[in-house]
Image 1 (cartoon, rainbow, N blue to C red):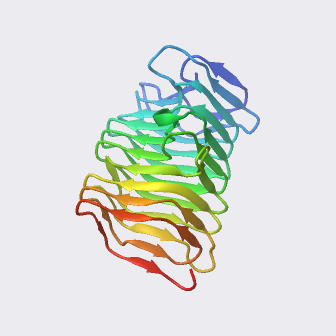
Image 2 (image 1 turned 120 degrees about the horizontal axis):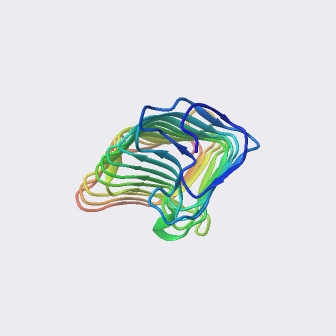
Length: 274
């Protein structure tokens, strides 16, 4: 396995973690080369992942190649540690929680720059980004490329976990394999800033907020001459809040908005001819 900086230039297939932060210190930046395939084989152990950040903090990982996991294997697992960034410019194919943070972990940036991430698992196992136990991500950016999950959520937050901001931009397409719409589940955590869809990007996702959680900066669609699309129902339950409301500055929004149990939306603004 790999536990220091540099570029991976050869294919690797293992029944254990391929990249991990060693106990004696954090690793520096790692690049997975453009012609490289890393495969995490099925193996009956707890460390079911390609990248493991548990024993020390992690730096930045950039994927230019292909990452593949078998059933019940994760791409990235951070537990009680900090990691600077994960950047995908290549291809990821997996069948379980793709990115998993727990026990107060933090990730600075999760970025997809024109790459493809496909989670083919159905049900809850198909969740792409899962945060638990007060874990956090500062910025999620999907700038171009394809994000497609099976029956689970695009994002799921639990146990007071948070994301600062989510940006879908470029010509990105975020969707669900079967129904078309994926989901962002904020039943156990909040987006403290905004969810924004920009340029010609498409977000096909229901958004569910409950349990006094919130999207602090609201949902923003477009701006200027942008023509993004957002399709999905927005549901607030049990005192949840959509701060700064919904702003459609340009592009198209096709949604049903439901408020239940003393939930609040500060405003809904539709500019121009939208």
